[in-house]
Length: 466
Image 1 (cartoon, rainbow, N blue to C red):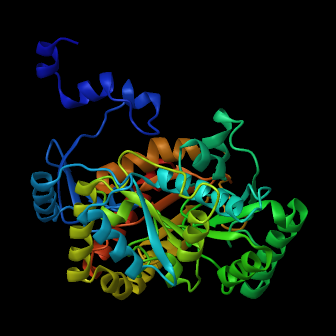
Image 2 (image 1 turned 180 degrees about the horizontal axis):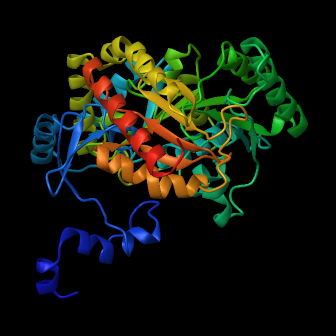
């Protein structure tokens, strides 16, 4: 494309011709319109025509502050750019990275005092894989190279992180991946036996996990990785005592416990970390997204003193991992400003105060003919949609789930002016996920649920599902 053509083409034309977009179907490059967002304010984003959308997904579970604090974070970024726009953390340090590491250590539970910084959630989980492997090697346990994750869980798109994924459709094209990854059941209650108690469900999950540990050989397992609230599969919360039981199994068998908090970290569940919210102590926390409200790319891991000191005393004499942008001073400055604003606005308190309202507002939607299950916690909620509430399944003879999502639900959401995650889950049911900015108050939550109600009503009517 010539320079002249590029200046006369619309943004949509340029994007379709040149920009390869994340998980974007071919139709969006060809015959379907491509939304172009140009500005944001509060919980809203605006497209180039001026249409306003309630961002019910906080970008991608990450714009904790919404869209009105870019200027303030930008001032911190500008100051840092004028002082020290870049420096590595390869045997040197600088104020933004050191201060951010210390602040994260204060926020994290227990003895999680050591921070390695990355640029994304995938990189963070990749770093945790290597740290767990090196920890066991440093202790002379070279056989501990396996990892246990959960079915349908998503941990990233890089090679190691993708290997942890329990989402078959994301990983199967690229197999064989990292060897030694095993998967156990997640904590989805919908479709479990109706008479099963929460204690019985917890016992089932823990018995299955321990059975796998023993089958594989406890001395071959490096770590178990789990999200406090599992995102993929639709806001899957843990039953009472589950994570405490997982912690006990890890301690008994010498396995590290990694909490993937890329989504649940930094207020999404009303605490700085989801592991605090659910009352368990990981050995490693991985994070990204909300650390800087996604205004700049930043991620990392927080590890216990025991883990890092063991590695430093091991044969390599260092954590044998590095990234050019680890601890980037500008990204760290943005994160420090973001955390300061979050404290000032008390976003955790806001989530705690409005969480019950969110749940109650969503409960009204259960009367809709296709709403089968409503679940979640804090500011992470999901609706599972079905045509047969008795069998808890999508059983329409004239409209399959994918067609309903693509041709009815997605256009209805766009018409209503709401952004949410719309997908078909691994069991064939449509999911509608909501995870709004943490600055959304009770009134905003009511507005969001109202827009979802409009979306569902429109989709049901257009799809002939009344």
